[in-house]
Image: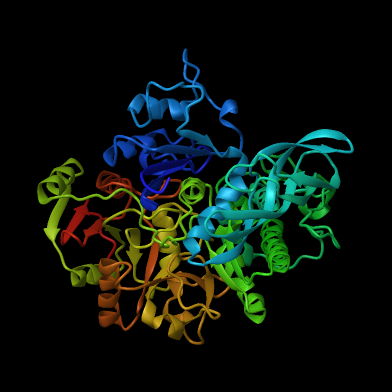
Length: 599
């Protein structure tokens, strides 16, 4: 298939869809943006958005970690929920056999492969080696010396080239049983061009890199999926000799110490804290009270520093296995911006180029599924752009803005960038709402909260407004032309997707204390006029007034909420918080909700 519409969907947490037309992304978004339930599964609301772009699709490519046969069914007809919804909407042929529909392709057995596809096709590389570090990918049954066991993808390496040559070089499968064994894995019958490929896999009953992170995240009092909180907590910890090493020594794959981490695949692992005096206390309370315990902080420190060492070893193994020095990284661990920056010194020494997929979470598998099918059927060799503003396009006229504003008791006034900068420099948070929402977890100027980074107490101030834990850091958006003067990018030209927590240049940290974490780093987004003209214009106006080319940027949401999607979501967020101002630069409008004054 070289033309037409392809709809890729991911079914699990961070569920979402990606609609391609002739190999180009029309839109891609996650379910949570429309249902307002964070990490929501089952992308039914997002599938409904497809009807705004087309009445028919040529292929529905479905990804998860278990097959459609294991998923929910529609009553009476018994067809699976997702192709059933596509059938009912008329997106696929209603008259074909609903249980064996030729337009429906289930790639749930290829979870890590579609992670790799998303990263490779969006990297701009002609060829690369893909490293996927994930919690639990596709399920399969493996035969070991102890019989059949249920296995889950943990870490994978793929050799990638166009059009659809994504060949498995290595896999670590995890299971619950206390075993470690090597098996000969054959991909006969695999979809999309990997038939007959044989590779050696390692099966273990040990937690892998992500399961260790999930276990520690739960131990610190959070949900396993909230690993970003542990990443924010880690620099509050220190090296603690009373905490055992998290991973076994002298192994060729990342194997966590099973006496410390008990895996519960496909779910998270459990910290077996009762075995260790240093970890055995049981604090009470909620929110971030557990993080006041130094053992929590120290285990977070050990988790970050030791998992990134294991990840770097895996990257170097991938380079050795493939002979390629261009690496693409995906899977949940790809969102670890501390680790991503830490790799660079070693990779630079080895002449290795790294691309980290900004939609590394499972939302990216909707994109990867659609792209893998497209390149396999079209045999195209045309690369894809790294576009990130992939949500639906919204356009509001003055009448629509005024009507919504009236519902939320908001005042609408004409405003310029200079008006917005005046508010920010008087210690006001200003929400930015424009264009298409960012896909993935980072706010990159279209659904962002903006603030002046020069305030000494800015981090505590904004964390309080957003109802976030005190130790959570914030990001900065900087004019691309000033980035190298202010930050050490370790050889990178730019950082447009906020995937690296980078060091400041000397003398910079004291200029922007609100966005510098306790370890002296800042997660930055470099902004060009071409990529985001309105956001670039605001930052430039801020520089002209203050001499500072960077603004405080955090996601436009409150703690526990997804990024806002629509103008109504945006106004609701303001109405539920002490955030007062909303800027719509495309319309030249400022919406003010309430009369609570910060300054």
